[in-house]
Structure formats: C-alpha cells, structure tokens
Length: 179
Image 1: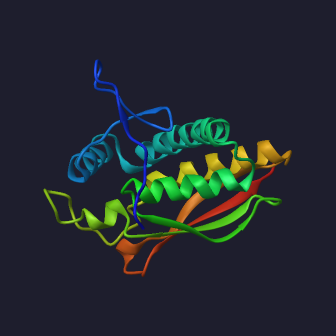
Image 2: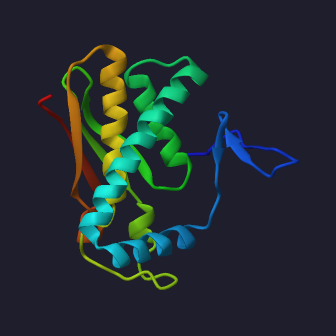
C-alpha cells in the first residue's frame, strides 16, 4: 500500500491538515510510551474506558467530516476510515465481515502499532490484549453508519483477539446493543 495522503502545511502556523482536518505527526515510540505511562498512572480499566469514549466520539466526528469532504455515504465512509487508519501507521485494518444493516462487524488488524512497539524504547513486552485503544473507534464509525442509513441500533466494540497474545493478527468485534 502506497499512502497517498494529502498533507497541507500552513506556512504561517505550522498546522498540518489532511482532508481539511488538523493533524499531528509524532514518532510511534513517543505516542506508545505516553500511552503506556498513562495506563500505568491511572490503571488499565479506567484508561480503557476513557479511551473508548474519546475514540468513539472522534471516530463519529471523523466519519461525519469525511462524508462531507468526499461525498461518501453509509458503509463507504467506514471503509474509507479503515483505509485512512492503515495509511497513517496504526497498522493494517480490514473488514473480515461487516453487515451495516445489523451493526455487526469483525475488523482485522495486522501489524498493530502497539504490538510492533513492544520491547522498543522502554515499551514493555506483554502477552495480553494491547490494542484496546481502537475499540471505541470501530463502534463510533459503525454508529455513524447506522445513523446515516437510518438504523435504530447502537453498537459496542471490543478487542477479542490480539497479535500480542501470539495470534497472526488482532480482531475487533462490533455488535449491536439494545437501545
């Protein structure tokens, strides 16, 4: 995959934008080390809940903005989301299965930033699910699809398998919840 992201840099402010959205470009080890330290400081459960909420809101907002920018609708926005995540160094994301009518999806993640960073620049090595940061993203994107296509459900997403546990790839499962 050759990323072809449009990156515009405002000369007078230094702000980077892709598709009109402000972006921050940081080394992987910097981001992962901050992630690991935040988890250690407040505890994994509390941190994971906070990341889920923030990730959900951010994914939903992103889908809304990208739909307008590119004239996309429904599942095409979610597919575009996974493509853009893959182009930005988080890992390679794809649907194993997806049903936008029911809110179900299984997302595969290969070469996760959190798995690849283990053992580098002080990041501990673990045999646990380490990619949970993404869970809220996938629910937020699916809920945007549901809203856009008139579906009544909301969803929940969880990391159900992680490459750090010894699997070939990570899996996130998105399921509808009763509203």
